[in-house]
Image 1 (cartoon, rainbow, N blue to C red):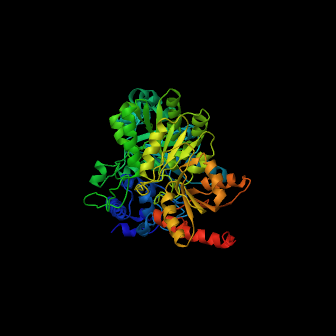
Image 2: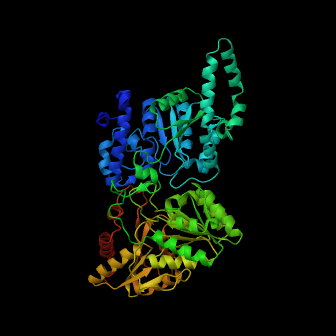
Image 3: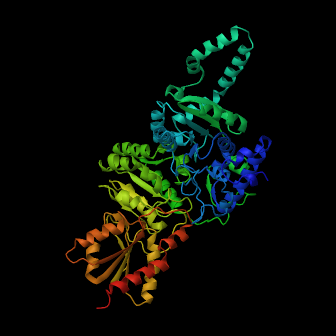
Length: 626
């Protein structure tokens, strides 16, 4: 196997040119097998194999630096830097991340996971090289979907005046996660169609060169007027007009051509954009036909393309999807907004049934929120469905445009809590903290799928900002018989006793329910409370707890700092007769990749560890010894 010759960075340069296609094929097969067994990002990685190979052939790593925007297309890069054997533990706890991680390998120069960041980071590295008087090229590889993000435009604006080499590679597969939308996509479609211009230009130059005396002068004349010609032939000339050299489109599967154009781009003393056409899912027919399904996928059967051990249980996302459809059928003023994730957030059916009230704004979370604020200001009821870790990108817009004006925008915060194998950049463990810090923001966390449905119905008539946060995956169906009607700022008391009160948020209610049984077996009287509203707190209930309980234990799937437990502790500390509060939460750390159950065990959030922690606290404080 040619692939076996790759042991470290730059080994690809030792491979004979006539074996490059073989190597590309072997890399694709390796990635398909690895993702089939471990799960991960497939389609985006299959599409960029030859481009990554060309980059490694044209660049000198680690002196030269490659930044992959978002980073979920870095598998070939990891293979070419000698990490093939580490794929056995891809995305496992303690194993190799599915994203670039500098601590993992010196050739991963920047930690990524969210989109539209690469050009900014690359520009910073170019300037750092200049200050440090270091050589080396810097390349930002950004997808056409990520290019819709506002941060990418800000970086392009700054890169336009650069007097040093910066290479921006536009990986154009006409797809992000879902199908691209917006003006940039329309522009790139026109550029793709304008590829004939480049062929025509090259053909003319070749023919003119054959004419003695006249030819060179004619070519020089053409070059002095090429900008005006391009303005006529290629629509917009967006990048050239910004002062960034545009090269392309280039065939993303043609390694020699890619290597040549990258090497030529390295010679330029300014920013240059190479437009590379790739095919998402290339080499695996099922991924080519359905790239959205195979963007990020659980372990699957390679022959059939079907998910192994597929969970047919209803997810929280399914419940959100079904409930908002029912609401929209009865209420014409409901609109749904997502940032390039109609499938992942459960809005795909909504988009088909109510296209005039559905808005996919592309990878632009900040715009999504302020756009929703504009809708709400005019009597529309907007539901903004965004993953927890992506919503944090729009903190300013939530604060400034929604909450200051106290607008009735509903945030459907999907993937809240521990998400799992995608690691630090995707764990939804900060939303209770950053949302809870904003005046006028209200936060609700349902204990099960039935309560999520009721919360969404409740939200329609709620006139203020409201975030409903729920976890990824299978919905909890337990405690169905406990369904106290939702009342603003009121918790639900499931079991009322004395001595110890367990007050849990959302997904942790299930854990608290099981821990209660374990404490009961030890002879303790235990109250169980479903917090429901993380903000505002149920202050009346918190006062009542102190009358006949010696200990309140709060449980949440959020970092300690700024979380629910911290707010409860602060409130209780101000009471005339404060009582003990123990907080069970995630430490103030970034949580790496791994199976959610494994992560919970390591973070001491599973029922066994929560039980042990409470017993240890009781033993150390001796609160039941009197």
